[in-house]
Length: 171
Image (cartoon, rainbow, N blue to C red; front, side, top):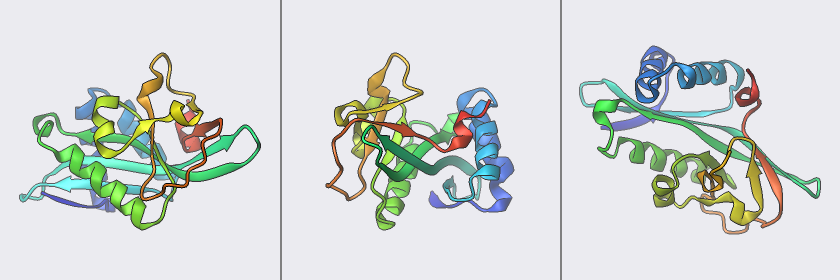
């Protein structure tokens, strides 16, 4: 398997992967809207030896607005999708690791994600509430909103609200 940056010829297959992985078109629609409305993004695909795309991950700009009026820019991970027949074969893990490594290489201060804590803890994510951070999408499970610091150990622990790219908030 190979991990590489998305190219324009991958868009149809990426849509298929997201629809199959989530069993609905909502995440695929989100990826399409982000592609159109967010030129600054990190989009990676996993490809089998036969050139079939089997996984996709997307990182887009995010910001933390602190209650003291300051803010810091970073990245949000969403969505991560793997074709169902290739799940539980480390495809998603390799996509996450490749994306986090790329953001570390770019000296990015943080990555946020809303997902399964048991899964993302393996990559160094921590519950964001421990840092005084909230997110509009957490609902009842505050542990599902997590943060990771790629190669950065000087993150300030103070109250704030994390915001994904504005496209996430559109109807």
